[in-house]
Length: 139
DNA sequence: GCCAACGTTGGC
DNA sequence: GCCAACGTTGGC
Figure: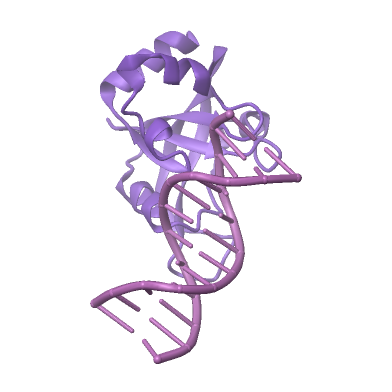
């Protein structure tokens, strides 16, 4: 199983929106960046990821699971853009802020730290374990 | 609100 | 195919 990080502005699509969709989940649509799209193409059903709020909050707020492989993005007719479907899994007992992540030397190589603009990112197994621990989730 | 970083576009 | 110009994102 691989791990990922999904970033969203909470004012556009937040954790509560994701939770409201329940097990049916929702498309992670609207991505218009090739790198991010390519990562979604690599995802498999059952992969897990962090749900990160950008902008004001800047924190991992929960975990999600990939429930459908990449397929055309329903929000555009442009065949270049694809997305996966994800569902909310576990809420973070305490949000893991960007500040906390930056303060931990073990997480200094995270894409979130190195390339803050990428909206869909891979997370290593170790990074996954550490951030899950900080968030108080089982992973 | 500003600005650095980055990606995309389009002219050559 | 290069690169300048431009637009967008997101942290600060």
